[in-house]
Length: 407
Image (cartoon, rainbow, N blue to C red; front, side):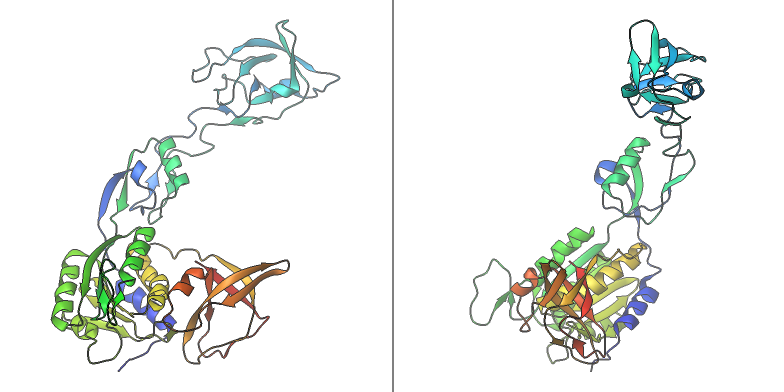
């Protein structure tokens, strides 16, 4: 019999049971590091930029020499030389002097500002005429403005983005230490399930869940391993789970989680010893018969057979589990405000995840429920996101504003 727990209770069980999971580390080239999770703080060992640098094409100056300059009364400065791109200036700027400088060029010693070319005149008489005053620091990035040597530029447990890779390249960090990818095993169970390569006959159905789970794990940044489609057999399921426990950090068992004579997942998990099954039943729709278990320091999840339920249980609970095991912060949820297009009654006692399609109106978004019958697969692909309906709620009314969590 199911011992149903609330969504919040399940999240707390995941946090307390898997928060001490220790995952290995490895060094990777930054070309392959996007999406990986940092295993340690990354500390700058040099200033960026390493020199005072111009941000515009123009003339390097001592700012005080330009004070009061205007179109009617320009400042006349002696042309002292030219800064070449990528080369260190071989001269020092003195009061009353200016130097030609390109964007990215290094400021000559003693200069502290750059006047844009547009605000100058050059009559080839050996002088530059400045038509606009500048303050110290105008047109300049000073040494260390971007990154200071010794500072933490990327913290541990951070998932790296393309812009982070650019920063690492700027610091000359070719290899960095990251956490190994979580290895997640997948097995589909059910006498009615066949591989997608097989021709359907009788009451057989193709294996949808393993393909969704495999792609979802790749998208997250985990390493999925598929262990095949097996029958509703205690012995076969146990053999597959034993392999997953030996080779993976997490095992996902699709099907076999509800109460019934042929549902063996709970018995299999408990057969490997304490703590065994932690959760059997979540007060959620869809996904009520979900199982969460622990063997040693590894997680086993018994997922419902219905693809729609698998989708939501993965996105809400399995993703949370992986973030806990990786030690990362929960991903930011993207959502929009929308008004319900129709009344939608909800079952009391369970938190419901309702897929919706968004319709853009001049006054905002309308949210249309897309599920009409349990078991329909195609409708989920039409949804833009979903609404979480609180436990014990009687549902949502037409015109009621709600948050739609985007896929």
